[in-house]
Length: 161
Image 1 (cartoon, rainbow, N blue to C red):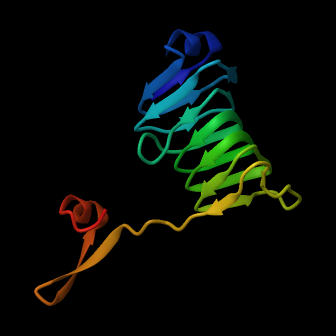
Image 2: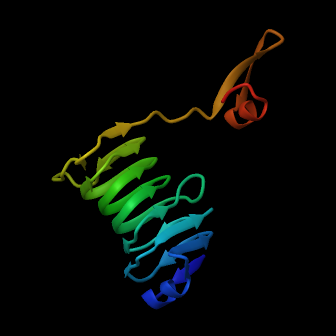
C-alpha cells in the first residue's frame, strides 16, 4: 500500500497532471491538487480529497472511503463518504452522511444516507438513475441441458455482447 503523509509527497508523484497509483493508496493528509487521480487495481482511503477527476472502480480500482470528495467526475465501485460534491458520479453503492449534490447525473446500484436528518441526493442538471446489477452468470442450453456459466466466459465464446 502506498501511503502519502504530505501534499508535497503527492505533488512529487504527479506526472502530466495525473497522479497514477498501482494498488491500494492511503492519504494520511488532506490535499488539494490540480490533477486527476487514477488508481489501478486498488482502493483509496483518505480524509479529504479535492481533485479534478477521480478514476477508481471495479475495473481500475476498488472503493473510495473518504470524509469529503470534491471532484469533476467520479467513476468507482462503491463510495462511502461524509459529503459528496461532484459533476457526475457513476458507482456501485453510494453511502453518504448528510449531503450529496451533483451538477450532472448519478448512476448507481444504490444510494443512501447514514444520517436520519439528511438532504436527499440532488442532481441539478441531470438525473439520479438506479441501475440494475449485472448478473454474474448466464444460463445456456447445451445438448438439451441448462448450464450456468460466467458472463465473462459467455462473452469470450461470443454467446453474448
